[in-house]
Structures are given as structure tokens and as C-alpha cells.
Image (cartoon, rainbow, N blue to C red; front, side, top):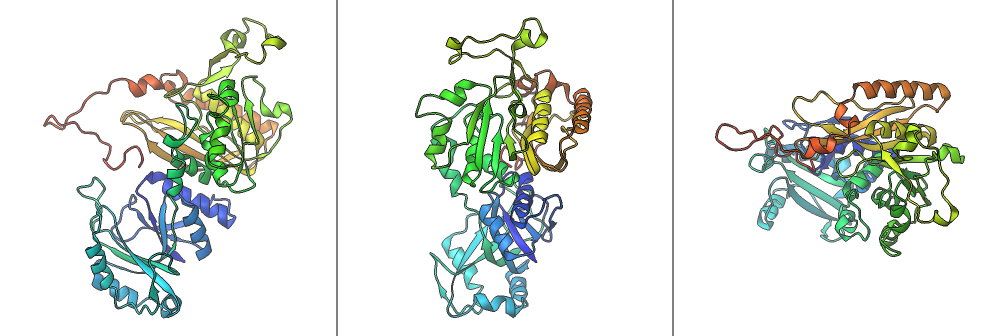
Length: 474
């Protein structure tokens, strides 16, 4: 059945990807086959209104209640360019589908919503009065109704508020199936969190990453760059068991004291504590410790040199063979900080893919960010690949006029073997030769923060080719 899905006007490329991942989570599908979508008449791809074909109302409700970017999912009773067309469409809607929600023993509420404009109470009442032809026999209950209905008008969408305009006005009316609870974003907002670092992941993005990874109770989620645990907090909120690692033992073990560390972040929200937080400064891969395919998802934000650069254990001299490996004396092990060396993004991502291929269960997901240069003369970006994985989605988040980051979601579809390990190494070497060199040379920070050339439109006014509505969060 076709449902009307109304999205928040945020993170535009993430909306369908999150929706389809949740559909796979609740419907038991792999998620590789996309859902059937279509746009309302006269709407463009960035419109908040989309039609989606779902097999059941229960699935639609589960997706809406779990999603971060879905404002609501509705059983559409009618649409039109005017209230006259809307009335005609609603009257022609099958009675057998309307009658159960209009019965005398039920309660209902009608909301009036619009994009790009706040509607006053007199205007809302005027719109509701135009729906008097619908034979509601139940009582109005504004607090806790049995059935919720919504009248949505896009008449003020776009134009002066910087959003792309809709060609024709369109009015929708339907029964609400489910709606997102974005109050959790206020609960988990970073400004109220006890322990933060310079790369702490925004709560909204952390929840989106968890949804992309199809996190649910009983799943085991791993973050190899755990930092202050922001990504794992989002996964734990949805019931997952969590586990992390970090090269900086001071972050994992000490934090800023006994009451301000990674563990205190979980305690603050009443979430289950991580199964373990590993120190990754011993250069010992997890599978060397006997760990096999055990993670249902790996979710992370690799260091790529903007706010923090990548480091690996060993030190330059040790990695080059100039000095022999050393043993730390027992009396110094507690406070010893091992030497480290620069860790390029390309090398880091290769190791990440290799780790995920070895330790994810079949069908498990790898979700991580990858930076992209946005300058006009930049070639189309290429992304790392691995024979064990299929790319499920890629979603760009614009961070500045210079660069953006792309959230890559990959699903494991093949077991890890020696032949695949060799094939993956060859793919890595090819990617290393053909990717943008500023990633390999560690020049991303200077490319992002160096002064930009100022362009004008001939009148002295600065302008950019980026549409106003495609900012940091959209």
C-alpha cells in the first residue's frame, strides 16, 4: 500500500537511506533492494513529501516511531491543488477504509501543518472547518486521541525562505500512522553531556548511524575509534551491547577523572555499560587475540585530519626498522604512553575494511564517514571497496564550501578467506594510486582551512554555487 511520508527538511541525502535501513530491520530484508518511491505531482527530489510503497501498516508505524528524520507517515485520504479538489478526493476515498476511524465510540484530533510558515490558531480553525464534510461521529480529544489526522499545505514552501519552491500548491489530508520522537535529541544533546572531546559525534548523526547499521536489542556494536563514546551511546540507546577501542589509553582509562569519563556518559543516560573498552596502542589486531566473527555492526568516524589526525602505534623509527621492538618494564607499564606515527586515511580505511571483513557476522554492517573535497575542479570522488562488502548507501553531509563527509553503509555478503584477503590488498593498492592525493599526504586540514577566493556576482555581493538550503545540516 502507498503511504505519504513527510520528512524533516534536514540531512536530505540521509532520509531515504535511513528509511530503507529501518525497513530492512523491521521487515527482515537485507536492505539491498530499495523500496518503491514516487514524488507528489509538481514536487522535486528535495521535497519533504514522498510516497512510499510498504507491505503493512505495522511496518510503517515501526519505521516512523524509530526514525530520526521522518516527521510522520500517513494513510492518505486525499490530495488536491485546492480545498475543492481535496474534498472531492476525500469523498471518493473508499468508505470501508474511512468508517473504522469515524465511529461514534472513538476520539480524534486534527492537526494543521505547513512548511515554511507558522499558521496561527484562527487560520488553523478555518482550515479545520473546511473539513466539516467528513462525517466524524466520535469526540474530539486533543491530549490522547484514538486517531490522529493531519492537514498539510505546501503553499508557503520555498521562495523567500531559501528553500526550492514547489511549482503548484498541494494540500494533503490523511490519518497518522506514526511519527518520530525527536525529543531524544534534546536528552542526548552534547552541551549537556559530562564527558566530551573535540571529535564527539553529534547526537542526531549518532542515532542516524545506528539506524543505518540496523542496531537493535541483543546486537553487538563495535567502534574502533571510540573516543568519548558518542557513537556507542546512540547504539546503546537502541538496546545494543557495545564495545570500543582507542589508541589513547588516557581517554579510554582515565578521562577527566573517576566521574568524568566514557563510562560516566553511559551512566548519565542510564544506558548499559560497554562490554569492554580496549586499548589499541599495542599494535595487536583483535583476531590475533582469538576473536572471530562476533560483531553485528561496526560504526565509527575514522580520523581524517580536520579536527584530529590519525595515529598508529609503533613510532617512526620502529616502523622503519631503525630500532628494535622494546619491552616496557613492569614498574612503568601503568603510565607508559607508547610511541606513535602518522596514520594516513587511506591506510586507516584499508585496515578498517579488513577488520570488518574478518569480524562482522554475515549480513553485518559497516557504517563510517569518509571525507570528500567539494571544489568545482575536483574529480568525482571514489570510495574504498572490499570484495566482502556491498555498498548499501552513501549520504553526503555538507560541512563547508570546501569539503563534506559521506556516510558509507556497507553490508557483508561474503566470508573472509585468504583469496579475498589478497584481492582486497590489490584493490587497496589500486585505490591508493588513484584516490585524491591530498588525503594521502595529510593536507586535508590546510585544504579546508586555508583562505578561500572571494567571488562576486558583479555587484560586489559575495555568492556561492551551493544552494542556500543545502547547508551544514541539509
